[in-house]
Image 1 (spheres, rainbow, N blue to C red):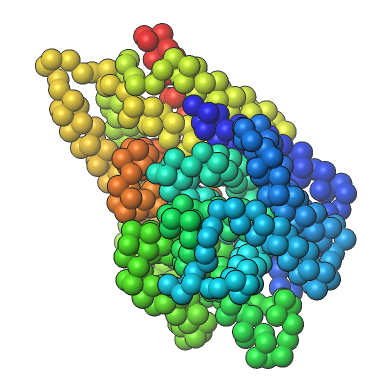
Image 2: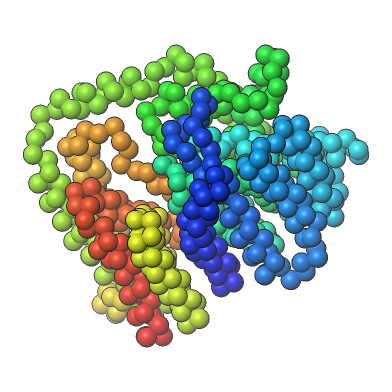
Length: 553
């Protein structure tokens, strides 16, 4: 219950405050201007990631019983955040930034000292004082790698959501209350921020945000490694887990040194720049990098599961693929191939698709109605306090959506997906209302599953027809949508590797919610003026279920 409170409080507070922060950043000219190395073509407010730091510190202050135990940690993070603020506002010399990062890292090492007895990497145990130098380089390198990763809208924040999620699952398995609290608050605030940071972004993390995300990633990954290695800080786990930014950073640094350039200077040799030049869209580039991230997450979980040799071999294989992105994509023109494929699709003799699409959407709505009925419940394993809390959170999100639709002209599609997800998660924790002596749970499950398979097939066909009818290069899914797809895949990986039963129900619920969400987007494609009504409909699903459960329990 406490962790639900922390998650939703972090999420809602971030969604509520970020538009005000954006307005403040624009007024004070804390913005990022377009340039040769910049992806964006408009002036964009930066330093938006400050909101993540503020919310996490508030949550830690409110829920950590022995706050003195983390004072050194807070000081370390604060030193780093101030350097990011100064850099975003005034600009800082690379050398000065490097010195401040090292000061922050030393403070973090002092905090770590109480938890580990030795430091090792790929099985090699480092002796003192070399172990502290290795840890210092690792912390500073990780912090900078996330800063370098923040080159596309939603990339660093989306990557961080994936890592915080898997670290949360690992913390729950070890019942580490501090890590659960830390990752839940980070997950809620970063997810709320992604609402404004995903492509097309309305605010950037800035150095402030990317540095603090890097700080919390290495903090949580290191403490998790200590938990799973009996007081040994095995850096192999965080290295594999965070391989996507770390391998890219090492590659870029070596290339710049070989070219006798400042390793901290900017260029377009990062993996996201290479992919962006070869891939059709911004969103697809972020999606591919996040898929790579999933691969390394899977390998890191294998490493924790005592498949260490296999995990290390896989790590070096996929790291080599990351390094080889440039020569591979310089020879393969993906954009040209995609354009040729689109032209072939365009020539297929299928006409008058819009009436067919409308009919398919009506069929989909009927199937969704059946799923809603068989999923609806009158009895639940949740207690009355939890039901009231969830009802309060959903109605709070509804009020916030209405308020923001008037203020910034957008409700936010993430809210719709979240509503569907909450409905299905609650239904999975409850007894179907149709259950009686004549209709068993197995029968209801079969009805639900076959209806869901049919709905998925109809939605998939409708998507293909929509693609043919509109023939647009623009992706149907937004940057946030693609991150949610990767997140769903991650929940299935966590369930399969960690055998995490709770995560299984989460995985299925997120998948069902996503199919409903695709229907919502397809309807808006045809009738944009239905947006408010459909969004209200999405809120009514969990609200109606929660009200029913409160009344009947």
